[in-house]
Image (cartoon, rainbow, N blue to C red; front, side, top):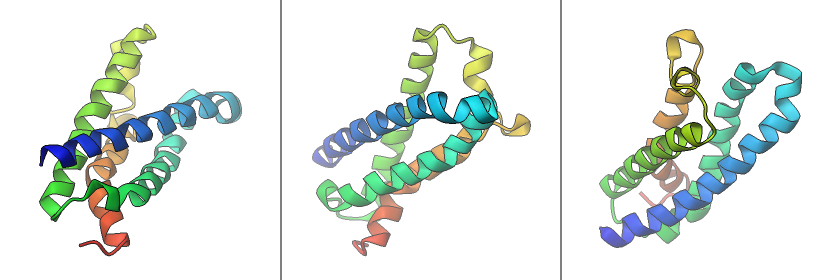
Length: 132
């Protein structure tokens, strides 16, 4: 299982690098037209497509043997992503309110939808590839 989680970590690095680029492009090209918060909402859905694409491309490389292992990889991705988001936000001197605004569904924050998808992305990708 540790090899699968190490491979999962490597895939997460690819995901986070792609999402970092995605966020940069969002700020440069989308945010000026729709504003910061709306751009962050939209990017949850485009981010899901990025995650699914990378997960699909790496599904076989993970070498998971069952759905539980894929779910555990998804949980790993969730923990790493939340830690990364909070750490980056604090590094950029964003307020706690600003950081957590993306997680507040009642006020339009859609990050929980993206995170829920992230948990199941390895399993969805494997199903699409008909691995399980």
